[in-house]
Image 1 (cartoon, one colour):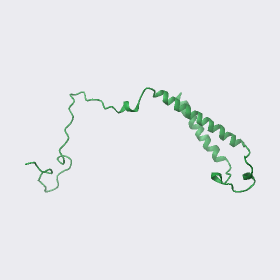
Image 2 (tube, helix red, strand yellow):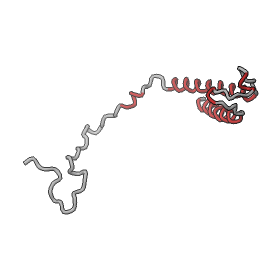
Image 3 (tube, helix red, strand yellow):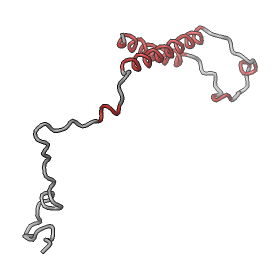
Image 4 (cartoon, helix red, strand yellow):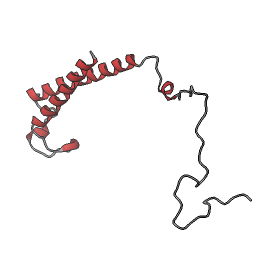
Length: 121
């Protein structure tokens, strides 16, 4: 069921993008009135593309909310913190030894036979 809603959601998104791109640009973005007959009226005439844009936008929001509810129900009772627990070793609990500083991390330089870490003598 979640896959069906997701496919509908994607189709609505593509349709919404297409309808918005098909609409004629009014100019004067961000509320700037650029003059002309259309800018004088308080409300532009509702065109078929404008109504279709509203319909697709409302359907898109509804599918978004539906997907959110489905995801919340699917993960009910589970927490992200539950997944970060590291399982304990079953083979006696021995961990590999960490190499001493500089002993196994880098190869010795050519002609350098001295130890990389000074001894505590």
